[in-house]
Image: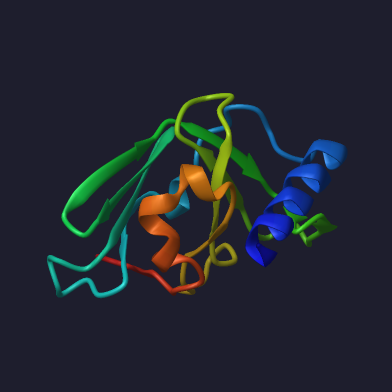
Length: 136
């Protein structure tokens, strides 16, 4: 319940802020494969493509075609602009599934998935707040 309330607050703050760019492409610096363990082929993976996010979870692939990029928004607060957050839905204009929180530009930090509408991210609930590292 707490996660749902937090998700609703995030949605409301996003709608009020207007900070996300519509259908913006994922910044090139972050494209490619991310995983909880790059050496383990069975580990969960996130693939960031030009205008899509794909996840492989428990051997099943999930495609998300609705991606908006924000450089200033995080939980309703303004950020420095040195980061990008991907607001992800299954289809463009669809219900908000999760945020892919990217590391600051020019760093080797981790990608984190943060909650959205639980019905839209049911298969990946257990991946929230787990660090994904960039696979080379």
